[in-house]
Image (tube, rainbow, N blue to C red; front, side, top):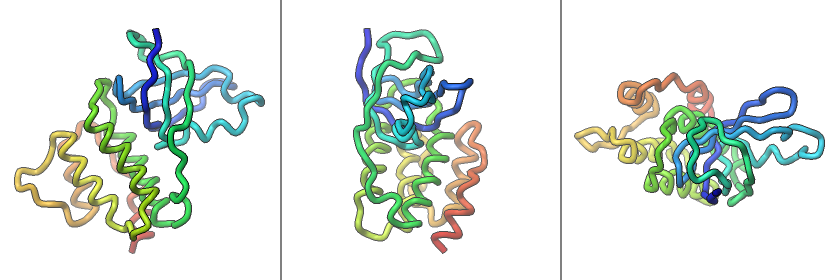
Length: 188
């Protein structure tokens, strides 16, 4: 039996000649990995955009599965970003958040509140007309609440370096974020 659930694509990896492995943070089951056989064949050209990092999709997945790599059934886009690529600032923040979320969202249990926060924040970043130079700082600061690592002082972080250092101290296997230097240069 299959269920439909919303998901946020974290990454995809080419596998073999024509297959793709996609990591998706789902509303129903947390982190799930799918293998899509034959996806990179000529008949599916152009559909790769569905599985770009931070794509918001609806995916069909088995209700109960003990496998770590699920067979892909079906997916469709739920939201099409229309403004992310309009400014270099938004696009840089988007790439940065993609890398951070890919490293943080690595657990396989559902977390409705965390999912809603990330999902709505991504739509908000795309749709805002206001300057968004501090969006990533506010997002990462608020994310600490959902991850259960909020500082006791409850003071917001004032720069990217301090929040990344804090994440590195409190989140297991949180590796350095490569895109943060590019983001720093763009927003400077």
